[in-house]
Image (cartoon, rainbow, N blue to C red; front, side):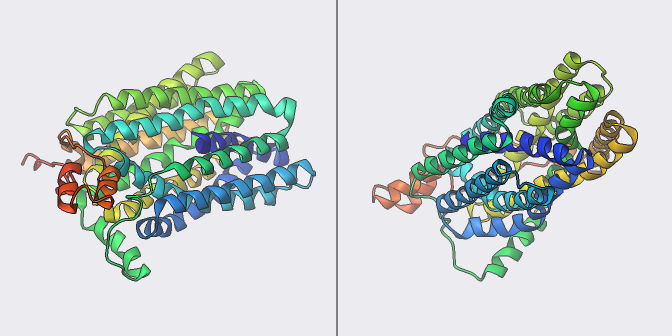
Length: 428
């Protein structure tokens, strides 16, 4: 929560600072791109590292780097030395940190809970992130005026340090995958080979990568809507971001109660269309309060899509490749800001509202095209995950303490057999 609060605050601060330094919407896209490129290019390396090293150590190290980068930014602002290229450079470091941090963080979730609670756990994780999306922008927006940007960055530095300290309390056992030691390049290539060998997994990852490409630009465009469309300033920007977070939090709660629904492909399709349609309505609404409601409700559908997509992918993954597969999912964070660049440039020429309408319509067309082309997605189902007595981390601890054999631990944690998505053949 501390980590994502700091990241959420910086999301707003970066956009606000970029717009202040340049007075152009395109600057928001360039800052996003400086985070996007390392996420897109470095994430597979981060996933390979996460499968090879102690995930606890990796999280502590990367979050320490995030704290240092935040402190440097605060110092540059407080000494009045900040220029736009500094912001780009720090954003680049942030993207590299995310590239190593997020695959390890995502790969840990199935290790910490019994398998039958996986969708609930993923919903809880995403709900926590969205709770910070409610709090973080509001906190940042409220603090900018009395403290100034520099001291708000100091607050984010403290939060990163709190996050780092908290992860010293992660379990010691179960943080390293039991596996044969192989050359790094062999592991790196092996992750992509595994993905390409699983057709359903490839489709789910492709859909998960494309979806945010068109859904994310609105989030990055919120500073422009706050200033130029609704004329509500920094405080209104915080409220807009919080409304988006409220929708995501509600969506996570809804998704947590849909774990028994077998037709996961239909859930993703409905969630994607829901978000795209309501984002179009948001962009065409001239009034602030109705726009807040549409933004929040739209994000409910987006969170149902993302939680379901994540759960189906994780449900059938062996632990040995989870970091590498999740790193490919994290590449969507790299594609998201890249999708923002043409939208922000278009906003400077045709207005923010029509630019977001174009992006949202592209999302609707893409979702329909994916499902029209792929019977696997239309018929994608997954049964409720079987009950397990232990989480993998608990099982690893009991093995280390000599209370269980490895075979007993695998049996009680459900690792002896992993379910895969069931795909009935499409009708002839």
